[in-house]
Image 1 (cartoon, rainbow, N blue to C red):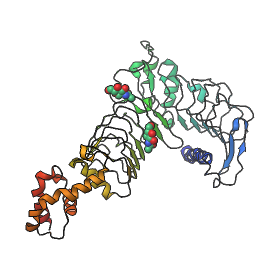
Image 2: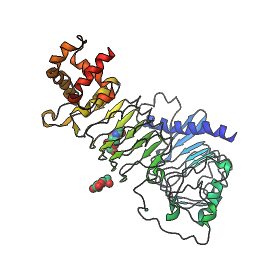
Image 3: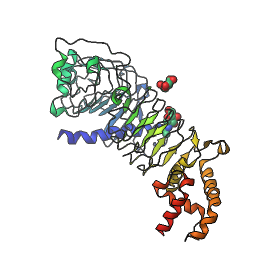
Image 4: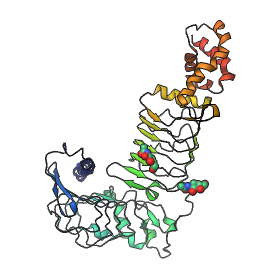
Amino acid sequence: MRLLTTLPLLVLVLRAAETRKSARSGRGRAHSRANAVKRYVADCKGYVEYGAKFLDCQEHRLTAVLLGWPEDIDHLLLAQNKIQVLQDNTFSHFRKLQSLDLQQNEISLIEEGAFNGLSKLTILLLQHNRLQVATEAMLIPMVRLSHLRLHDNPWRCSCQLDSLVRFLQVPSNRHMGNFAKCAEPTHLWGQHLKQLDATLLCSPEFQPVALPSRPPGIQKHLDATLLCHTYVFPKPLLECKSRGLKTIPADIPASIVKMDLSFNNITHLRPKEFVAVKDLKLLNLSSNGLERIDTDAFAGLLYLRELDLSNNNLRYFSYGVLEDLYYLRILSLGGNPWICDYNIHYLIYWLKHHPAVDYTGLVCSEPHEFQGWPVENYVKTYNAECPKDKQVGSQTDTAQPGLTSQELIAETEEVPDLLPNPLRDRRRKKFEIIRLN
Ligand SMILES: *[C@@H]1O[C@H](CO)[C@@H](O)[C@H](O)[C@H]1NC(C)=O
Ligand SMILES: *[C@@H]1O[C@H](CO)[C@@H](O)[C@H](O)[C@H]1NC(C)=O
C-alpha cells in the first residue's frame, strides 16, 4: 500500500525536476500550465502541479534552508546547493512535506533532530553528499519514509553506523539505502550497507583505518557507484569523467540512461561490458585513447541513441561491432586516425544500411594518398576502380551481365566470411555470386 502511494510521488518529483529544466531554458514556460510561478527568498520558484505544491531551490548555492519560504509545500527541491550541515529542526516548519531532495550538496553532518516534524515525508534523497556517519535516530521522526537514497557518500563502516545499517537491512525497508557502500575501512571498502555483516561493525578487533586516496586493487573493476557520480535528476546519469579509469567500472546501476566516461584511459572495450545497462541511451567514450573494440562490446545496447567515440585512437571497426545498435541515431567519430583500407568497409557498409544514423568525423588519416578524404569517398573510389582491373575477364565468364562492380562488392560484403583481403578473395566472391544466382 505504501509502495503504491509513493511511486506516483517519485514520478511527480522527477517530473518537477524536468519542468524546471525546460522552464529555465525558456521553452517550457508556455506549456507548463497556467500556474503562476511565485518567487521567494533566494529566488526559489514555487508552483503547483497536480494539486501538489513544489518549492524549487535547486542550484542556488544555498548553504542553509532560509526563513521566509512557504510552509505548506509538499515537495522541496534543494539539490545541487552547498549545504554542509543539517541542524536540528531545520525542516520542522514544513509539516506537509512529502519529498525532500537534498542530493548533490556537501552535507557531512546531520544532527539527530534535523528531520523533526516531517511525519508525512515519504521520499528523502541524500545521495552525492559527504556523509560518513549517520544513525537510525535521525530517521525516526519520518514515520512514513519509504524511499531513502544514500549512495555516493563516503560511508565509514564503523560501530557508529551500526544502527543505520541494521535499519536498512530490515526487509520492509527495501527501497532504502540501496547502492550505498562503505568507503572506509579498507577491508570493508566497496561493500553494500544493505549486505554488510552488521556484527562486524562493532566487533572489538575493528580498527578504523583512513581511506587511502586510491584503495588497493583499484585498477580492476572499479565500482561505479563509489567512483562516479550517479545523478537521478533529470535523467539517471552516471558521470564518470576524468577519473583515470582504465576499464569500464563494475556495478553500474541498471537504471542509468546516460553515461559519461569521457577523458579516461579506457583503451580496450571488451565483450559485453554494457549488458547490464540495457536502458542506456547515451554513451560518451570520447577522449580515452580507445584503440580496440571487441565485436560484442556493445552487446545489449538496443536503445542506445547516441555514441560518442570522438578523439580516440580508432583505426577501423571489427566486423559486427555495431550490430546491436538498432536505434543508434548519432555517432561521433571525429579525431580518430581512420585507416582507409579494406578494414574500414564494414563501417561504411553498416552506415549505408542505417541511413538514420547521423555520423561525423569519418576522415582518412592513412594511407597518405587518401589522407583528409571522407572515408565514404575512399570506399566509392575503391568500388569504382579496384574491381575494374580484374573485371575484364570476369565479364565473360559470369552469368551476371547487369551487375555493376559496386553491386558486386555490395553483394559480396553481405557475406561476412568473405570480407578480408579483396584481392585474395576475388575468385571466391565470383564463385559465391554465381552460386546465389
Ligand atoms: C592515461 O595514461 C597515460 C599513460 O599510460 C598517462 O600519461 C595519462 O596521464 C593517463 N590519463 C589519464 C586521464 O589518466
Ligand atoms: C562527451 O564528452 C565530451 C568531453 O567531456 C564532450 O565535449 C562531448 O560533448 C560529450 N558528448 C556528448 C554526446 O555528450
